[in-house]
Length: 118
Length: 114
Image (cartoon, rainbow over all chains, first blue to last red; front, top):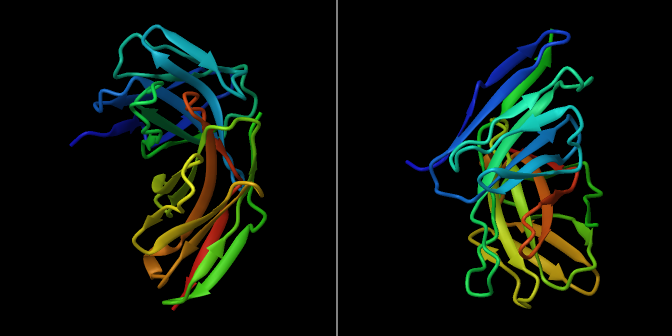
């Protein structure tokens, strides 16, 4: 079955430690995204990538880094510079369609990773 | 910049009844999409319904329908014949065509009363 796989489901970070959240998709989607969800809030965009080897900052990129070396993979690193990393992290993907003939804007989401600080 | 506002943090409805969740948005673009996503306790985000701004007809998906008022920038979700499985957080979201950066509201927690 095609889909988006996030791992691990739960992750704990120690002070001063970098941790990496995995996101893999086999939907052959061009675009991938990382969102952060805090309790009582909606999703906020951290980073997104529309093609391999290219990515853009979202609204809350500080303290995070990403890479897009393969179309299927978009890992997110939460660095020690992110002082409040405890949150639920969601990865998503979509087909990047910018033409009038193909209007299918929708995101597919993974099941998420809950990151907590020890 | 886009903004999406959901003014109802919580709603409840009797099973089998109808409930409407409110959403307003603001965008300077003329071509955009609007979405309702459902997030059950599993926290998996599930697309409920989608509306293209250029279409005047309101989108419908089985028991879910929207009331899209473009001039008022309003996009409400109506759930008919509510079922226990509809209990979840519901998020309204918008994106400009070709942009694909979804902007989300803060969500409405829907409780279904048996």
